Image 1 (tube, protein in one colour):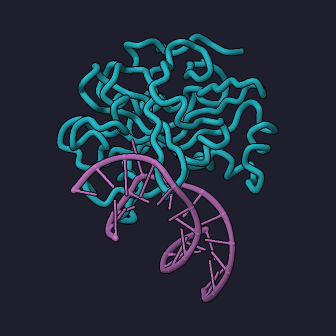
Image 2 (cartoon, rainbow, N blue to C red):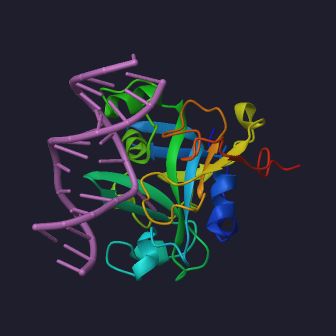
Image 3 (tube, protein in one colour):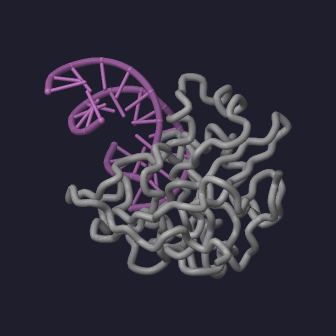
Length: 216
DNA sequence: ACGGGGATCGGCT
DNA sequence: GCCGATCCCCGTA
C-alpha cells in the first residue's frame, strides 16, 4: 500500500509552496514493529531569509546542519525534551524547511497507541512532538532521505478523503517573532489539527486555493 | 471548551 | 544559566 515517495524536486521549491502541497499527502513510517501512516493535515513553513524564528536564521550549527542539507531530507530537532520533524526544502545550503505539525492517523493505529499510552485517537498525532512519538521518530532519523522510500517517506496516495479540502493560512504556533507572517497551513475543518483554527485576531483564517496539486 | 502554569532538557550565550 | 517551532493537567464556564 506504499505509494511512490515524493521525488526530490517536489521538495526543491519555496517552503511555502511545499508546505501547502504536503497537505493531504501521506506520511509513512516503517519499523520492525510494523507500518504506521497518517495524512498530513497541518504544516508550517520556515524561510531561509527574513525569518528570525527559523532555526537556520543564525547560520549553521551542529544541531541544525541538516536544515542546510539537500531538499527531501529530514531535519529532526529536540525541544522541551521532545522531538519534532521537518522536511528540508530548496537547494542544499539555503536553510529552509517545512515543519509537520499534525497528521490524521491512517494505518497502524494500534501500534501508535501503544507508543503513546495515555492518548485518545484524536490526540494521537495532533502536534509535532506527539506525531513523532506515535511514529517513533527521533534524532537517529535526522538527515534521513525521505525520497528513498525506506524507514520514513511521504507519498501521494491519490485516494479517498483528501480529494475535497481547503487550505487555510494562519500565524505559526509558538512563534513570538515574525508575528505578521501567516506561514501555518492546515486543512479546513480537520479535527486532527492542533492549535487554533482561527487566526490571532479572531477572524477566520485566510482561505487559499482548494485542493492543492491533485493532477488536474 | 478554553486558558494558564509547570515539567523538562538540549543547545547556545 | 536561559530559553524555546511543546505537552499535559488542572482550574473555571
